[in-house]
Image (cartoon, rainbow, N blue to C red; front, side, top):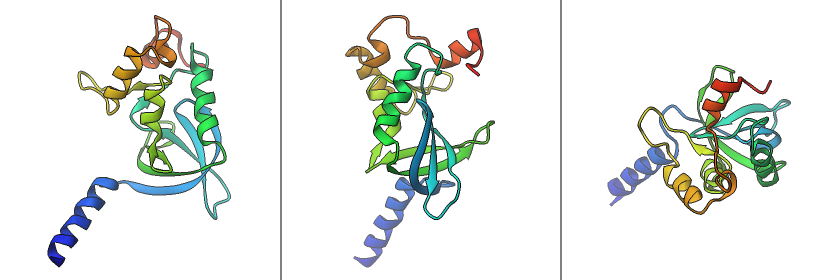
Amino acid sequence: MLKRLVMCAVLLAAFTAPAGARMLEGVVTHVTDGDTLWVRPANASSAVQVRLQGIDAPEICQAFGTQARDALAARVLHRQVQVSVRARDVYQRSVGRVSLQGQDLGAWLVAGGYAWSAHYQRRAGPYAQEEMNARSTRRGLWSAGGALEPRLFRKRHGSCH
């Protein structure tokens, strides 16, 4: 029985904190756009820039960009979040899954029509089901036709900065 309980605990840890992930907990001090925020850990003097893994929100100068940022800010600004940091990107941001009271914010943003599920080559992204539901119910950026994926927007128009 004890062996079974230990095995369950090991499996639970493996699925809740992926290999190579570093956990970070803190208060959101700033929201840059629909997929980037700043988290100040307890007892730290400065905040850490975090890019939400698995999503791509519209650029701030792109249609629906400010709505995506404002929705994320309304949900998390000045609130305690948990981040499972998986990597660093080319801009030196921490990249990871962010949750608020157990709710995955990437899933919440995609389900609300504020972001795309990031897909790689022909593989569906981690929030493909949420994106499909948002599209079919015309939520958020899907309410009007012609939504342009941020990666295509950047390719055609460059960065907003």
